[in-house]
Structures are given as structure tokens and as C-alpha cells.
Length: 193
Image (cartoon, helix red, strand yellow):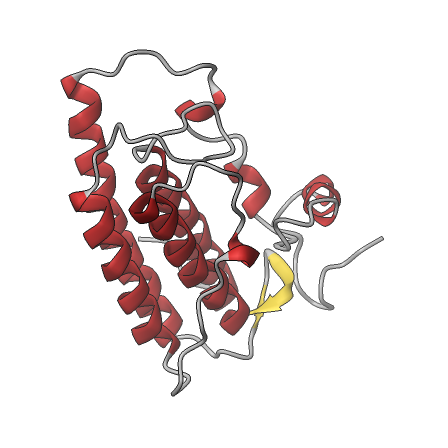
């Protein structure tokens, strides 16, 4: 079955739509599925971490800040009603809600040191009052960055991967942000810088 809107090229494999459609936890019928194949948490059980890992944690937080603000800029420049090409069931507004909601979800897990399975639908962030999705994303990521910068990277928290520590979340949010910036760039017919 072809779920691609008329006149839009396939930008992800059909298999990704089937994988995403089977996951009630992730409604993105597009590129989110790739994220399950990224990152050290997929490589196997965690081992002792070194000072290099702490540096990487700080780098992930710094890169997340830059990427999230670029994502917010891209949202501000987008038609909120446009269909997101790699996620054809979503409009740009839905993608913004997804990403901002993930910042809220991940930072709440880290801040409250939640160790039990907790999914985004359990920690929903309220939509912006004034429909300024770019400002809402910036607010959400700034709150998350504050939490990540003050957290102990080795604090045990829930994740669905093999590294149940706070250090997982900035890296994971960086991946989410980059892949969804690509989704917006594809949607808007622009190169990803």
C-alpha cells in the first residue's frame, strides 16, 4: 500500500512505514524508526564509563542546544499545515509537538530520576497557548538543557536501551532533533545545513 501523498517521492523505505505502524509508542510513520538503530545503547550492555564519556555527554548537550534551535528556526519558517514528507500522517505542527514533547518527556525522566518504564503519552507537554510552535520548542529545549546540564550523567533513570542512565537522554534527543530537522528540510525542499 502506498501511503505517500500524491506527487511526493518516497523518501524512506516502505518497510519503515510498516515498522512504525506496528509501534503504538511512536506514531511517526517516517524516519523515527531509524533512531532505534542508532547510538551506543544498541551496542550491548553498558560498561564502566570514563572521563571521555563525560566529555561526550557535555558535547551531546551542546550539540543538542544548537540543533534544537535550528529545528525551531525551521519550524518558524515552515507552513504548519504542510504534510511532513517522511512522516505523511503528520503536518509540521504535529512534528513540532512530537519533538517538543520529547524534550519535556526526557528531561522529566532525568530530573525526577524516574526508573520505571515511562512513555511520552504519560508525560505530555501542553501545546502552546498562542500557536507559536517555534517559541514553544525553544522553551521546551531550554528547560531540558538546564536539567541535562545539572544532572549527574551516571544517575540511573529509565530508558528503553541498554544504558539506563541520564547520559542516554541528551544523545537520544540530539538524534531525534537531527532526524526531524532532516524531515523538515525534506518537506521544505531545502538542504540540511
